[in-house]
Length: 302
Image 1: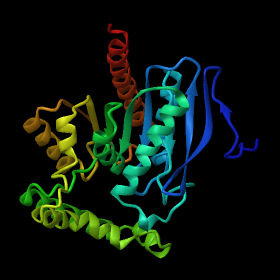
Image 2: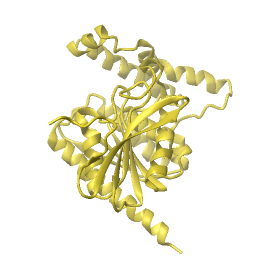
Image 3: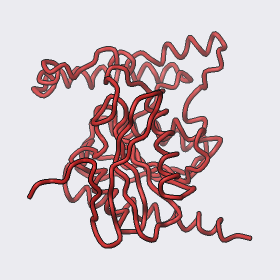
């Protein structure tokens, strides 16, 4: 059986359909898949993949979550950030700002196409960082559901940023000895400018703040000022788990923002196991049901 072409809509069930969508950001096409349902919940889902990923997520995790949410009555959009997958743009040009712009535009497309006013952002890895970063610009976001999200380079805590740099130097050093890393290097899939931004970008931000140019102290500040329900899931076998967990737990403790943490024993960064995928699905559907109930109550309130 031949797979349908990208521009063909697909009926997944009597209630759930998928079709390709395309919208423009700064003159470049961003492409994705819209999941629609016959009788939608008041909250839709926007999926944001990680730095080196594509819209389906690792081992199609985000595709699985989108379709499971569709069967539960939620419309959703998963899309390729510019420079990734089928969207326009060059990978080396991608940065936090471009990824945020893509996400905001995707949210507007989702609201317009599905007729919803509220959404939950589901982000994996760097996609979780984007979800937090755009919160202030997206008042219709009712919740954040994040997987394997990294700490930010805040520039508001020099000691922590030094520890973070040391942590990622170790991460990249470990990756240097992996066969897959050398394969990516040969294929031109490793961008050293991006690595340098990860390692040292926060020191540039320190300098900008010192010069008084108005750069925000941290994307987390918008979450502090505009709190919404947050769930973060980590795999206990993810090498970055402990540093990331400690970072967000510290923020939750100091800010009072209610963050729910869920750790899956034995799981890695990308949750490859089918059992892990199912566990995440259950957590997501429970989270969305609670957010949808709150949203519906606010709609029904006189």
